[in-house]
Length: 267
Image (cartoon, rainbow, N blue to C red; front, side, top):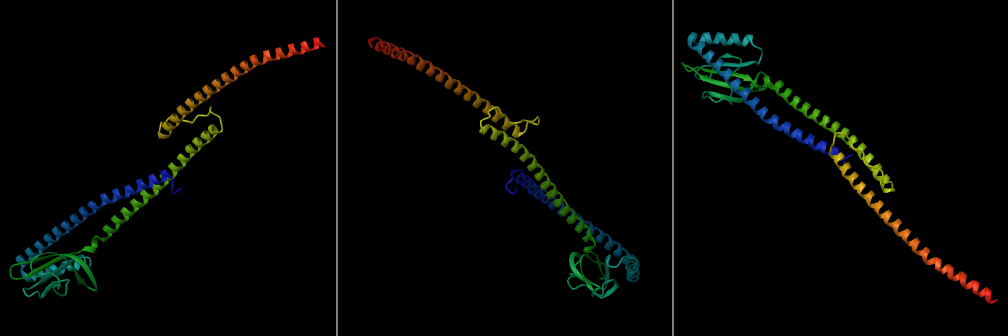
């Protein structure tokens, strides 16, 4: 079975299909990652600007009350919020202190911080406001982990379906080819044993095997004509030889009879 050309061809197509699927999924995965990251950064920028506006309009106490209300209403770990003074002393939020691996310069960062009793990979936006206050707004990147898992599961399922379908098609094709090849083998075996009237069967689909069968049938017809020609020539030669031998044998028989009669008269 491993040497079957149909199965080998099917497995080759399966391998090419998997490569094509991976080549299609790679840029899709990259585009999805970039889109998610850009969207996350944009949302964080909007949140940080809203908090900065609250701080500017209502002062530190108003911003502190607003952030505390947001922390109480949200799902645990949904957002990371922190308001500090100029010396990075926490005033409000769900972080106990300024993360040590977050730079003090304003900007966007992707770092791992300790949130509660676990480490969280986050996207953070640091905004410095008037009055020396610092705003830190972030989101847990693991919130999108289920989507990533579903993507990989979908890709694995596609590879599995493609592999199984390719293997089944290869086995079915191999069985169909073996059936036709066995028919060709039986016909050729009969021809080898001297029955030149056999011909290979052809079908209406006119595929490669039909083309081969018609070519072989044409060759067999030519061979049959040549054999009949040789047989006719052999029969003609045999007939001519019998005629010649018969003509030679008749005078010899006549001469033998005349000699016997002469000897009888002498006696």
